[in-house]
Image (cartoon, rainbow, N blue to C red; front, side):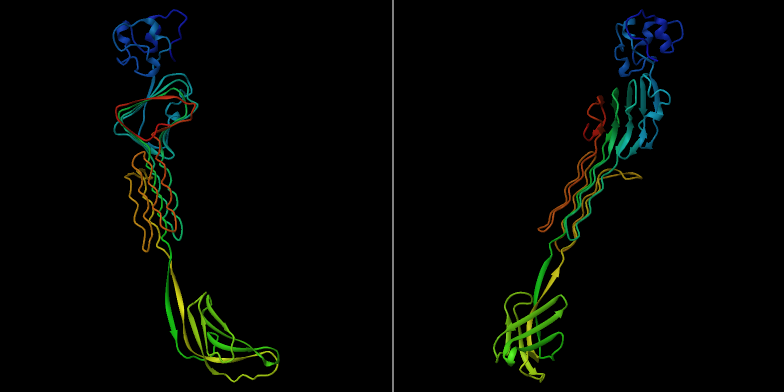
Length: 370
């Protein structure tokens, strides 16, 4: 465990015991980074050269060093069995050939750590990719997911010395909006036809056999019924200028010789032809899906993808996935609908607001340090 704090006399034998130095002892053996004394933050008072004295060793300690191996969702605590919650200084080395990935964070330092931890990274710590949103189908595109974080630091006392790569995952691109539906109208002409549930003309008589009105109908299909109504005993043609099927016309044909009388009744007629407008609705094309972001996809590290175009007619393109630690772009809008939002980029480092850590970087860091 670390050397005692200031307040009592410190002997060279105590320093030698802590750093495992066999006799005889010389102070020049105990420079920080010289072989016996680890170059970690808990030993910062110990010089790397020049004047060295006993008083600089109060609180210093022989750090416990562990080498990480490649893996997924690495929790640092089990790497230091029995010492993670003790005050010893700890060093986690990550060699250049080591790759650590995961979701929601690739490497996590839990909150119950005591002492200090120096993460010396020469490898690759990469967050997960964000997935692209779905393209709209008759509506808006969906939102993409955020990229994963590379390192989650939940405890004070952590230092990152990075000479490798630490990258949050890229956010996914938002889904593109569906295209607007269109309507096309065409005139349907029809010739003389017998009275039926589809075409018909009726003269409607009220009390005492007095003519009330003429009515007609065209039932093109159950959802497309056109009705006519017009007074006049000698009317042989009815027109419709507004509403479903307009402009439309129906001509009166030969009578079916239905009986009359003084009570209300109707006389049916065949239809002598006419026309109506048939409207066809064409749905808009589907929006393009959003591209996936950079990062770990569950089996390998993948590059960011662009969002594909939407389908015709009018489907909007999906947004592009974000690069390392970057947000994805929003899906494109159409005149009728909105594209989905791009996902946020993953952090290179994330931590609670009350946690303090330090970073020294000579490598590559992509993504916000939160």
